[in-house]
Length: 287
Image 1: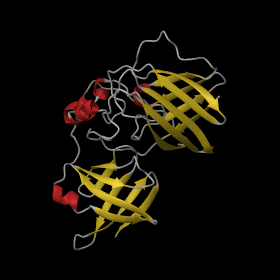
Image 2: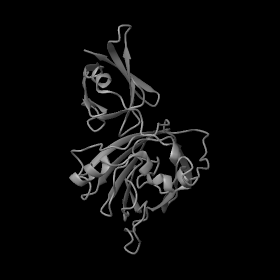
Image 3: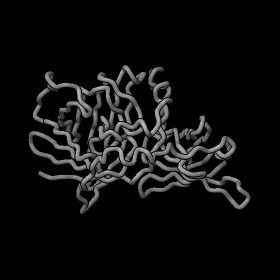
């Protein structure tokens, strides 16, 4: 038996909005517009559906641990000390299990890739901490591939025909956190709920100064404004488009651990922005 721990960089609390309007069914778009951080089920000690090695799609900084045995895989997270027991002995999904927040999971090996299929969710929580809704028709397919020592690739396909117009897949990279143990993480009965805010709201003229075309290592990126968010069209990251303000110049991705920060010269003209994920930073120069 062995274990692998992964820790992602911490992220700031996120305002909840419609993230992918072209993927959502119309009712889900309208529902997302009405939500705020104060509606987060986590404030009521409710776990999110997707939280196998992380608390959510968006990479909040909790440790996840994978424990492997011949007949099952156990996945642990710091979040509320939650866990999933995943049989890998060929058994199918159970047909006698009641819908739940984390669903029912079974696994199989596809070469060196662990494929985990999850269904049997309820419709009482959020799909993740960013307010994406879920229904009882939700299914998740996670593919875990150990690239080399210390690096784990995770590809997750989300399918919920009542919420999304079509299934979509997100890729995440997890890094071994050596000499790290899972810590106690306890829900404290909404003590912090009254202090939550919904992020930073910037006036249109501030957002507009960041709009334009940028070059990132020969890749053309186009920044535009959508409501109170920035849209970064990046051919290498087509789903990673919407960015929420954390300060006047810093923004966080709505779907990943990516952060961007714009830099201006002495005259106030925006010259470039840095795109950061984990320890990796890239510079995108304005054209």
